[in-house]
Image (cartoon, rainbow, N blue to C red; front, side, top):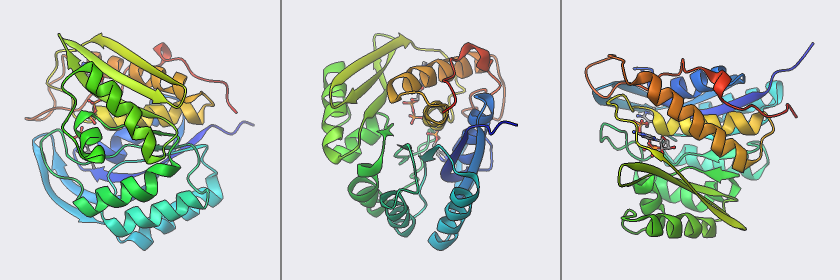
Length: 274
Ligand SMILES: Nc1ncnc2c1ncn2[C@@H]1O[C@H](COP(=O)(O)OP(=O)(O)O)[C@@H](O)[C@H]1O
Ligand SMILES: Cc1ncc(COP(=O)(O)O)c(N)n1
């Protein structure tokens, strides 16, 4: 008898199956982790855009987290779209009480299709109350800028500087994703002792819906397997790149299609189970 690693995602539902809860659970499964979920909002969404958003009442979100934590004891947790400020505050309290272990915060603000997924008050609560409990946060360059109240990074130097400054918000590590320089994609991981620049050639695909959710969920899966943040981030990059490469030939939906979560996970290193 063996207990598989468990990770909990607290995020919004994407009816198109490309991002949010659906991307997180597919990523967990591909990486050998049992996924539990607490839904914060129901979005009416497809590859073309977000057509409506219905937040779930915060007490219902808290109840979902509470039952999962007490029964399944997740080793890692991940937050994505938070729904509303009441839910963001409630999650911050759960995190302060130690109920969201090895917390990965993906500060979701806007969808790939350009729709706002969080209001200013959600951003403020996330920044001030939730981020200080995170093992790692995974903003893209726009989200990093919104958290810091500055312009998006225009160079690797800006991106590196912003990754460092995000640590001042109280998170243990920050990875700023999605920098672009001469065709390369750059992610910068900052910890209190180190800054690491990870670069790879850009993958030319229209099917990039859900990359941020997939990346953050893969980091959480790595932490659930017992990897360090550093190794979990490296493994997550490999997984997202495989998912993007796999989806280059896809035709799925009429807009920005999802990445393929059916990518061969055997290429991705797994940690020892803790
Ligand atoms: N076209 C691409 N080619 C290579 N890597 C990509 C591409 N698009 C996204 N990524 C990678 O996917 C991960 C998620 O980042 P990003 O796309 O910035 O998230 P978000 O969906 O939040 O904007 C990062 O590791 C980033 O470098
Ligand atoms: C429910 C939900 N959560 C997150 C995203 C962001 O993902 P993306 O930036 O790829 O659109 C989304 N579109 N929908």
